[in-house]
Image (cartoon, rainbow, N blue to C red; front, top):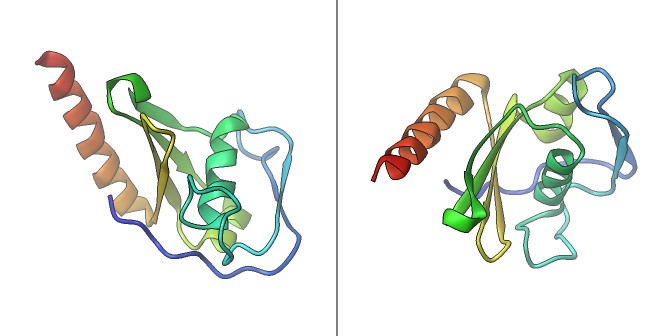
Length: 126
């Protein structure tokens, strides 16, 4: 997966997950184009999207950090599409805790997610 640059945003956006099943609470977003305070993320936007995965915002998961890499698929609701600049994100966390986030269109996300699921399935078969 390739790293994507930070999206553009303004201070104090709020992501409200109540309209999407399984997502609860509010995550406050500061400037999404800025750097993350943690070395685990390429940008603040990536960190905020990862936080959505911790708040029940996952639509699907594959892999495990124990076996090398964990993957999560997050499909954005309407306001999140605007804030993050895509329809969905694929989040990858490696065994050292580093996180990579790809924000994609719906069809790109579907294609990449299918490839990830297939690769994880093939790895389990070995």
